[in-house]
Image 1 (cartoon, helix red, strand yellow):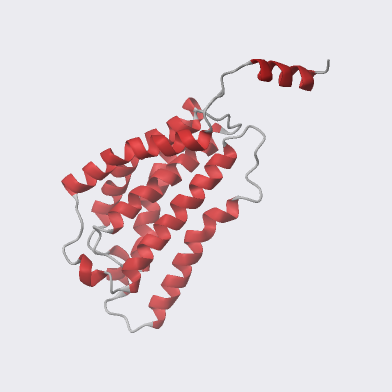
Image 2 (cartoon, one colour):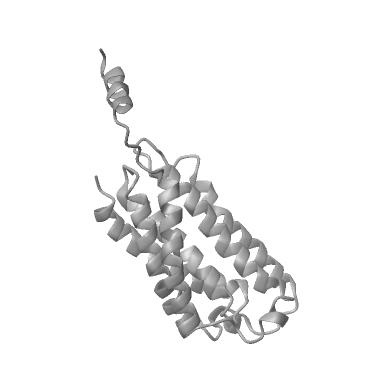
Length: 212
């Protein structure tokens, strides 16, 4: 009996089947989400002018950008949870929010500016953004790391970074409903910096907890 046949025989004799990584990751994020929502509701909340803001395409754009980060990051992280997986051919999915932001910044540049570029870039909520997104992302990051531990990523730091992208994208989606800075320049700067911070934390923690 060769090695592969032996492994298949041993697997067939074992009635226990480990849950799929995708199912565990989904459940872990669902368990963590209420804590992130509680942080949002307690300290931030939905902006007062949300009904009128929804008529602003740049307000809607924020959600498109954050979800185009979170959803592809989930897909890529599940792919990278397998020991033989390579990032090649999958990394382009993570560039979707970059493309959306580029289009939005170009669109804003062609419009008559409502305020100076410096004001659009810095906005009114840069400090809040840098605190809110990481704070709401941390419970989701813990859930994402827990879910990915049920896989066998060969590059734990990268898998942890992807968990950071997942959690930051979801947290930024929550924060977008609070943030009154709708300029794509603001999103490209401060949302990105907050996401980079969470991603770095995910990579550092993932390099330890996702190692096998």
